[in-house]
Length: 85
Image 1 (spheres, rainbow, N blue to C red):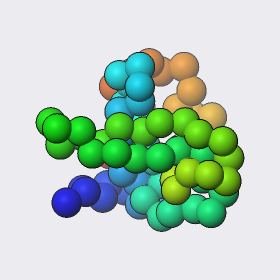
Image 2: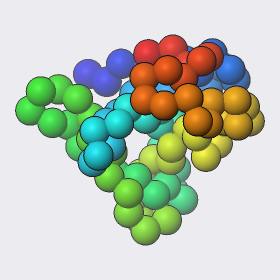
Image 3: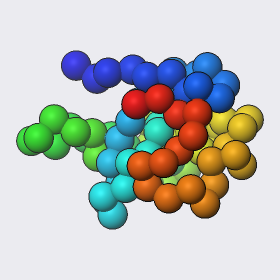
Image 4: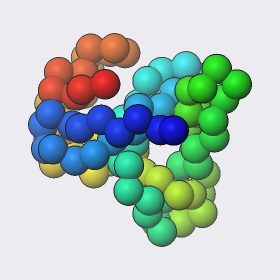
């Protein structure tokens, strides 16, 4: 089962995933017809987020939709103030 977290900046439900480069990324928990990410469960249980053409994915990075995303830019992996895991 996927654990749903809450963005402490805007209150939106998010899913923490790992990108193909190994970085943690919050993804909107709600599916989107305009999504540019696909999510796949890995053997270790983590969700891998892969970028695809917009509109062909099922989800969107929360960095693209959070009204407070600019607050979190440039902090580096693992130190995203206001984001709860």
